[in-house]
Image (tube, rainbow, N blue to C red; front, side, top):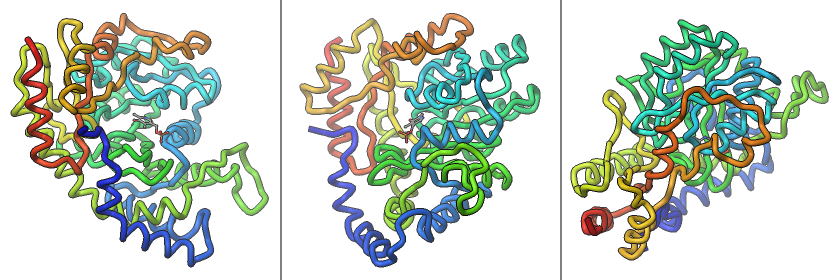
Length: 370
Ligand SMILES: *Cc1c(COP(=O)(O)O)cnc(C)c1O
């Protein structure tokens, strides 16, 4: 079976570097918020091109803490997308804020023109959590124009988009804050949970550092009701010593595979949109959209061919049961979002796929009955 993610192959490659990282932390006798977290933050900030990285316990926490340092609180309206991991909306709900959903485009990305219309007609929307979905970077010129025109606070959800750029500009460098995740399946994954807040603003970074550690500004002095949201020394050491040094090669491998899929998949019932113009995608996921309500049939066919596929995401966030009891607003009909959710299938695109497996995936797609 060809897997969506092959962590055993990753381990075979990273084993020695990971064991060295573990040895270093074990020997140091320091396990929480120590030198490894600090060095990882500095290294990632330099690699990403931002002034500050604040490592936290998850991508979910990174979004929630980012929103909080920007002043988002109970009852505030937060513009966001109906197609993403549940965590994007959950971070907003946890603050008691109100997600305002607008529709997405044919790639599944939030429609920035619809965002503009929503902001134009409702001046109560002061916050925005756009998602660079599937590793594709949104149009950052448009995003910047929106931020400046409406003077809103933006947290870019970069959980899927580390290393993605638009017109050469990295995802995560336009909003006042960005959030990313080190969940194992992400492009830069840990061997457990983790995440980070990214920001050029030193004061915001300082607030995030206080919030991640119970709201503690000095030892036993609690300025805020914060969180226990710290990245372990162990995860930081693994990320810095074993995974971050491989990120460029992993990205190159993902881009090669995406290129092969875009060139090779030819089927009248499969839409393969590739990445939007201007965006150099990080290819966290590779989406195909199945026409004619045949998604289930296509997925069964792929399984028969020995190819694991995924769905990101089968249900729009606005249709999740948890939203029934949570205050939220929907602008427009979100028809495109629902259509994306009912037709999207993810093909394997992890960096340890080999050439013959990529060919197998392409052949499986093309051999599906018409
Ligand atoms: C994974 C993910 C998150 C949440 O990250 P966790 O580390 O799992 O909390 C948020 N947003 C998006 C788009 C994601 O893919």
